[in-house]
Image (cartoon, rainbow, N blue to C red):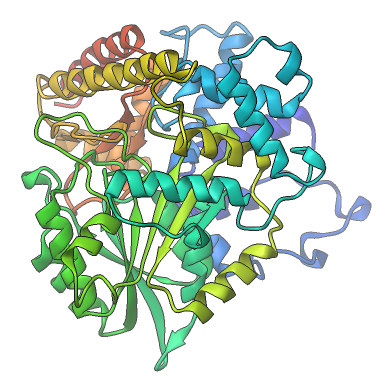
Length: 519
C-alpha cells in the first residue's frame, strides 16, 4: 500500500469512534488488483471469522483520539500551520512523558545491573552497589539477560512481602506474591481464571462505572460478562452498597457473577475510599461469595486533607472472622504510578489472599507459560518495595525526590479541580488521589445535534474539537462509562505545573468559544 493510501487509512481510523465504524473503515482500505494478490475472501483471517471477542474489545485510552493526536504531531513536524504548536497529551498516566524526572536510586540500580562494571567503576553510593549485587545474585549467570522464575526473583518477592507488612502491620507470605510486567498483566492473569460457564451461565465480573478501560477490554477479550455498578458522583464518587445489590440482582438474571473490581484510589475518578466503605464492600463480597480484585496502584497518590489509603488486605485482616479467612482477594501494585512513574519498565505485583492452594498452583502454572516478567521491571519493583532506609547513603536524595513529586502532584490536583469548577457548565469533584480528574460538563443542544450528524457520541465530538483546535488530547467519558445523559472526560494531572496552567488557560478559552458557537 502506498504511503499516501496509508495516511488516508490512518485518517479514516482516527475518526472512527465505534467498533462498527472501525469495521467499516477496514472495508474502505484500497486494495491491489485481485489478479496480483490474494483476494480478501481467500485470506485465512477475515473480519467475519476473526475472534469475536477481539472485535468487541475497545481501549479508549489509546483509541481514535490518540491516533489522531499522533498524526497531528507529525503534521506539525512537517510545518503544518495550526492554531497551536504542540500536542498536550493529557490522555494517559505516563508521568515521565509529561516531564517528571526519574528517581535517581531506581535508575542507578538499573544502570548497575545492566552494566555490572559500573558497580565498581561508576562512583555510585554503596547501597546502590549492594542492591545491584543482590539482584544480580538472584539472576541466572548473574545477568539480567537470563530468565527468572515465572513469578519473579525470590529476593524481590520477599522484599514485596516486607513492604506489605510495613504498610499494613500484618504478616505477608512471600510465596503469595507474584511479580508481573506491570499490574495490568497480573490483573489479566487472575481474570482468566474465571473463564468458565456456571450452571449454563457466563461468568461475570462487577466493575465500577466509570472504570479503567483495562477491565472492560479484558472482560471482552476473555468472553466474561461486564457487570457495571455506578459510583456516586454527587458523593465524591463514593461506592454505595445499595447500588452494588441492585447491579448484582439485575445481572444474575442472565449471568453468574463471581468477582468484583475495586479501584482505590480511583481511576478515572480520583476518589479515595474510607475504611468504612471498604468494610462494607468486603461484607458484600462475603455475602455473595465474590472474589475481590483490589486495584491499588495509586496507593502513594493521596492528596486531599482527611483522605487516607487503606489496603483491602489490611482491612480484611483486621475485620477478623468470618471475613479474614474466607474472602478471596488479589491486590495489585505497579511501579508505573505513585512517585516512581516508571511506566515503560513494566514492573508490578499481585498479592494473593485466601485462594485455595490447588487453584493458586494452577494460576502459577498458567503464568509459567509466559516465562517471566522483564528483569529490569522486577528490579524497579525491588527499589520500590525496599527503598533506601534512613541512614543509608541514598536516603536523603530519594526522600527529597519522592516528596517533591508527590507535593507537586498535590498542587496540580487542586489546580485542575479549582479551574474546572470556575468554568461555565462544569462540575469537578476534588481529586482526592490518583492522577486524574473526571469533570462533568454540559453541552448545548446544538452541539449534541451536530455530534449526531457526525455519528459521534457528544463527548467524543467535544474531545475531537478540543484536539483539532487546541492540541489538547483528553479521553471522553464514553470510554470509561457514565450515567446516561451525562458527559465527562478524563484528563491527567501529570503535565508539569507551568504546562498544566497553560493547558487549563487554553481549555477555558476553548470551552467559552465552543459554548458560544453552539448556543
